[in-house]
Image (cartoon, rainbow, N blue to C red; front, side, top):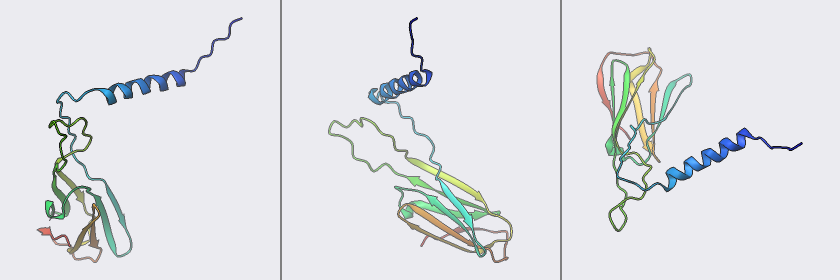
Length: 145
């Protein structure tokens, strides 16, 4: 009797590796596939405040705008392409995303929207909203310190 080794997981792994190698070695033919930027956020709270830590690497503080309207906090801006091209002017492979971005957060009721603080350091935008009840319907921009 002949023993034939059968390993479907190993076959799939080998196929997956071949597909990845194919696309990694595929030359850039000028297709610009740029996915929208959606900043990742940690949203947490304690007894006194609500916190949002928005990850926006590669963006300058001056290029970020924070606004509040109808209890919706919106962070927007633009990530600019500041990379250097190669000597012949062609980029071999670019995996970074550039362009405008917007992310909105519905704030819970009962927050003091007059007391919103924002700071930006090391690519993280930190927003703190006080829970002290004093919510008013208003539209305003929040300054980043």
